[in-house]
Amino acid sequence: MGTVTLGHYLVLSGLLFAIGLAGVIIRRDLLIMYMCLEIMLNAANLSLVAFSRFSQQIRGQVLVFFVITVAAVEVAVGLALLVSLYRMKRTTKAEEITALKF
Amino acid sequence: MEGFLFWFLAFGLLSSAVAVIVNRSPVASALGLVTMILALAGLFGLLGAYFLAAVQVWVYAGAVMVLFLFIIMLLDLKAEEVTPLRPLGVGAGLLTIVLLGIGFWRAIPASAWETSGAGAGEASDAASIGHLLFSAYVLPFEGVGLLLLIAMIGVIVLSKSDV
Image 1 (spheres, rainbow over the protein chains, first blue to last red):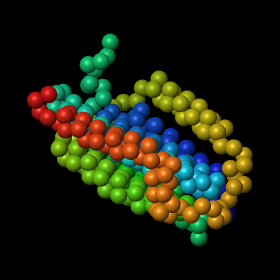
Image 2: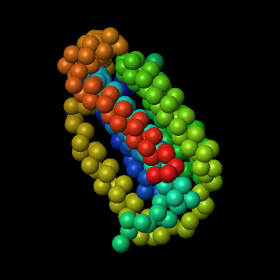
Image 3: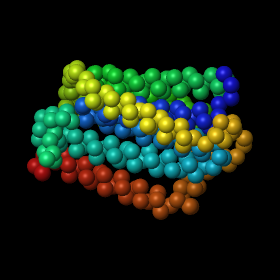
Image 4: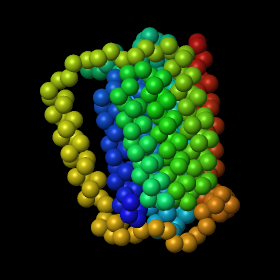
């Protein structure tokens, strides 16, 4: 299997970020787009923890702790927005919500 | 052993992330997200960040996923219908992937492939993280607490039906 280096973790994190970005672009449902945003946040967390491990500094983990907290806040507010949007428009499809479009 | 665990968890991580975006049913996507979060918690544990692995399971697999499943149930979301691909969209997507890949690849320094494993550095248990949180990072910590309060009030205001 070989030794696992920092590069392995960084490539893994990049691939995970790319999958999340692809999801935000491909999917049309706002809720699934939210899930893909979470995937991208988690990818960034993975690279932060890997850097923290391989540079022997615990401060990276403190940053990840803050990122996880802010992500939880973001999900709560985002899903509340989604519910009130659904109440108004009866849909969660991104292409049917065009109130701010030219 | 560490190598085997890494490849096993990495495979689980990427395949469940792909499952999130290819499944048309929202509940199946949510279950893929749970698997991805658990695999990532395993990777955190492999990296020696045991506290973050526990927080990942509590906050994401616990709170956030319950929220997602609750919203799926509340809004009664149906599976997404198939829409035909547009050639322009496919081309732009492939171009994005190639450019992003080049950018990520160039961002990884060559020395990253030599820093293997893990000597004993600072202890990364919950006690030392907590000590940092309440000494050097006490202001951001309070700020995050305030942010949680604002979010709570905001969610209550948004959910009131007569706004």
